[in-house]
Length: 383
Image (tube, rainbow, N blue to C red):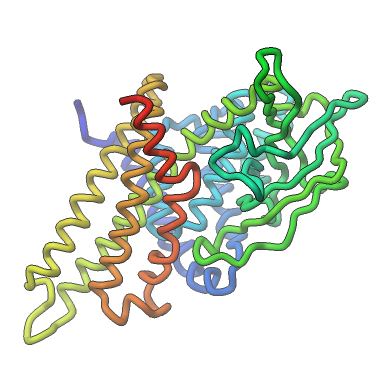
């Protein structure tokens, strides 16, 4: 059992950290305040190959392993969770289903430009009346007429759909009762700009304000029959597989953000003097920092182990471990962010410092890609 990262992984970490600190960090506060998408930074990430990191070179990617993928999101999350989520929604939710389940035609037409950073992708799964209960609450319908899918319905809280260069959305739609009597949910690729497909105005969110989040509506939207991703009626299992992939990235993002909170808090505690000595000398502060350090390291180990299991093809074990990683890391980072604000006192509460942004961002990690409650259900099924 080797816990050392390879030279390739270390080089990737250095490159992404350098990019995030030099290109992303200077604009994050302004973009967060304005609820603005950092389009130029995302474009540069595409040019560096970061948006296609995990896809084969055949499809415009870099062919990196899943551990590299986790490191990418850890380092982006260390600086800004909103931008990390943009990459997640693009590569994981947009690109992964096409690469894993899509036809060669869909891969060439949509995955290649996505991996090259020319367009972004997204996934339309959540609906106004349902989040976790996708099976029963997918009310958006797709009916096959004259070799075209006619789609009607709506989606909520969709990341990237309103981004300026978003190209498509993988939409979950009810396509009829299957032969086994179950509801058939299919995944259908709908290009942005298709008549009847409306991207509603950006949502004004508490956190993750550098990512764009929109509701979607579909009014007799027509797309070719061949735009179905994978097997008709089997889309739900495909979405679940995609969410497993997304849980790895969410866990990694939580690790990155928590690591940054620890770094800032440790440095501040050694500089801030109270009652004649640095506050680091007080056990109350030391205990908080120790708990932060231990929790961050535990979350990182769970996350890296999950990535390695996926790289080894142990998908059953991966599903359980990545649920553990996502659950622990997401809950942990809320506590770490709160402790970081507490250690910084008033400075942690003002927008001149990034701690208040981390504090606002952290709760969503325990909601997206499966809530903490759902993660417990997933883990319990395997126990």
